[in-house]
Image (cartoon, rainbow, N blue to C red; front, side, top):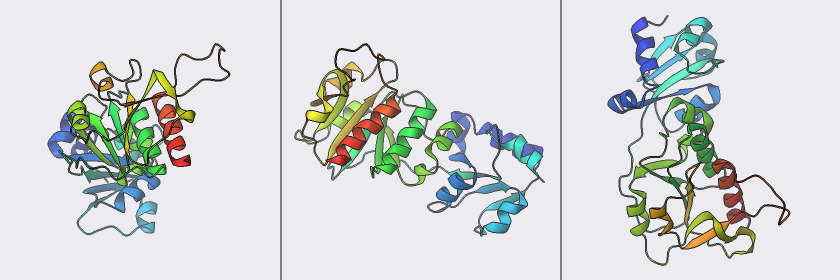
Length: 249
């Protein structure tokens, strides 16, 4: 059984203000919670008895057995999935090293939590372990973002900070890629094995301040050439296309 106070506490974590105060976030479902538990110990687990019967949980974790209807009162999902867990927010790296040994994704004002979560999942799929986010990018630890990562949040480090400052701190020879309408055909370019891939805001693309720091402009061409097509691609889809081309080389 779960108390009204505990339900109220968990529900408050939908809001960034309270997540920041408590330094925690919520994950839901066997897949997402299971992946997160491989790298972090949850503070609280709320689950049906069947889930607990299948899992060994640290003695440090508060365990709350609930019925399905009680889980529904706590869940942020339309269709709750056996388990909800409250995890400590991992510490952010305020100033990551300016020496890149591989690829890094930088997000410039990506607003939609679903897009952000999908990009984190894409980064995980393509072996990109770090994403640097501008301060106006959506919160990686909101319930919607966490669910969209499908557990990839446990394997990708997220940092928030001044993106322009971050890019300017890199050695001048570092390739900084950005997708733009005046860029060069992605499929005809020489792509490095290290560098930064900048992806911009859903409506406005890469901001002027960040554009000045991009030294490799890329274009994802539409097909066939000259045909009227959609004006743009979803930022998560564009990220997947670019990352796939980098890894194909």
